[in-house]
Length: 214
Length: 242
Image (cartoon, rainbow over all chains, first blue to last red; front, side, top):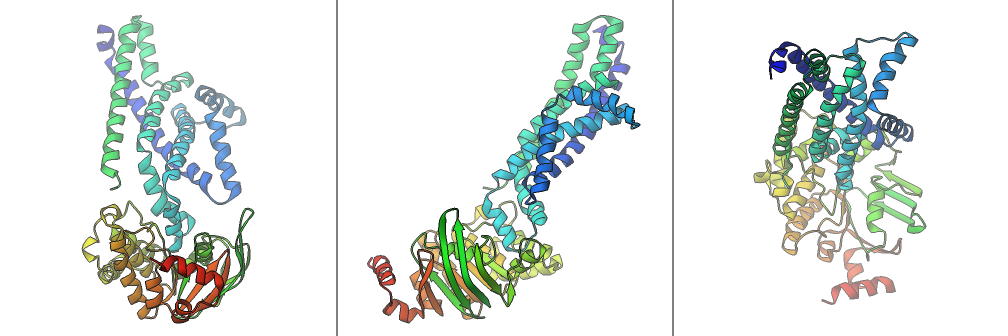
C-alpha cells in the first residue's frame, strides 16, 4: 500500500494522461467511425471501396505494430508529432475502424422503408443519412459502441510502448523503484476498472435517454 | 402531369413491367388495381425512381425523370408518396416528421413549417397527436400522419402504394376519407389499392394491371359494370363474390 501512496503524484499524472488520451481518442474515433461507416454504405462504388480498405487495413493489424510504425517510421520521411499526439492519432484511427463496423451494423438495422420515405420527400443521400438513418442507427448500437470505447481505454496502455507516460507506464515506473508489482498493478487495474465502469454507466444512461419509443 | 411511355422493368430474369403506357392529367385520380405480382406497386415506385426502370420514359410535369442526384431529389420533393407500411421516422414526433421535408428541402422557416404542419395534421384529424411518436399512434393515425407529411411538400402528384393494406379494417375508412377529400380538392393522385369502394367513389379512371401489363383502363362505372377483358371479369368476380 505504501508503494502506491508514496507515488500518488506520478500515478495521478499517469491516470490524467490515460483519461485525456481516452477522451481525445474516443472523440476522434467516433468522428472517423461515422465518416467511414457512411463511406461504406454510400452509393458511390469508389468511396465504398475506400471505406472497406480503411476498415480491412486497420482492423487486421495489431495496434502495437501500428503505433511503432507511426512513431518510428514516419520520422524517416520527415514527419514527426509529439508522442501523445502520435498515440492519439493511431489509436483513434484504429478504434475508428471498429466503431465504423458497429455503426454500419446500426445503419443496417434501420428499415429500407425509412430511407425510401426520406428520399421520397426529397432529402438527398447525405440529408437522409443525417436526419433519418444515422439518428436511428446510432441509437441501436450505443451498447456495442460503449464496449469499443472500453476496449479503447484498455488499448491506451499500449501508448506506453512508444513513450507516453500514461497509467500503465507510470505504474511500471513506480514498480521499478518499489519492486511491488502486486500492489502497484492492482492499484492501476482498479483505476482502469473504475474508468470502465464510468463508461459503461454513461452508455447505459445514454441508451435509456435516447431510446426510440416503440 | 405524369406521362409513362414504353416502361419496362426486370427484377433479374423476372419481367415485371412490360411496355407500360400511362398518362395522368393534372387533377386526375387514377386507381391502379390488379392481382398481387401484377406490377402495380413497381409501376408506382418507378414514378419517383425508388425503382429504376429498365427501359422507357417517365415524365413528371413535362420533365423527364432525372438520374440519381440533386435533380432527382428536387423532383421527388414534388412527387409525394404514401407507403403501405407508413414509414414514419420513428425517432421523430409526428410534427417533426411533417416539418422535416419543408425545413430541410424547401428551406421553409421552422416556425412557418410548424404552423403549416399543425394545419395539415388538423386537416387529417390528428392535431392532438402532434407531439406523439409514431409508435404511440394507431395504424390509421400513422397513415394519416404520413399523408400529412407528403402534403407538407405541396406535391404536384401524390402516389399511394397500397395505403390501407396494412390497416385493421376499422381504420381503413379514416384513411380513405382523407384520400377522398384530397381527390375532391383536385389533387393529382395515382393510387394502387385493393379498395374497390374507393375506386368507385373517387377515381376518375381505373387501370387494371395483370402480369406486368395494363390490360384495361376506363371510368369506374364502365370498368365495374362491364369489364371488357376476360381477365378483368375473372378478377372482379373473385374479389366481389363475398
